[in-house]
Image (cartoon, rainbow, N blue to C red; front, top):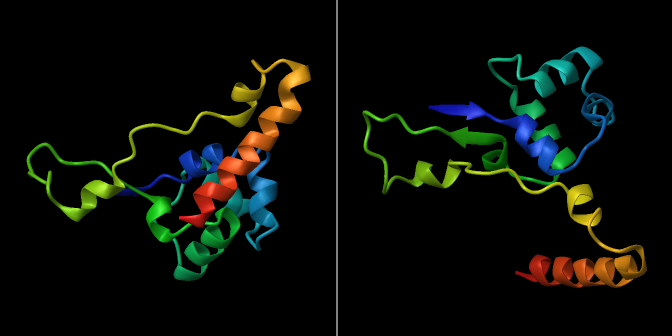
Length: 119
């Protein structure tokens, strides 16, 4: 089964006020609330495009595949859409770093980010 899993993406991006954040990209408060709460059955292509712009992602990042036990899909391309875990929240990582080491820590993160974005 394919389903949207936008809450996972929003949480992974550490968006603290998702409804307000989505409103900045042209969603009404009502639509933003429904999207964040998962209370929708479909999205227009224009909405998918707005979400991709807002979260710097592709449509594949908005969708999750949950395999059906009855159907063998181990070699199927849909398996790339199986989402096993959420990314660790940044504030959880930072809270264990001593204050005097935060500058070095953030510099290393910046270096890693640059390296990863080169790929």
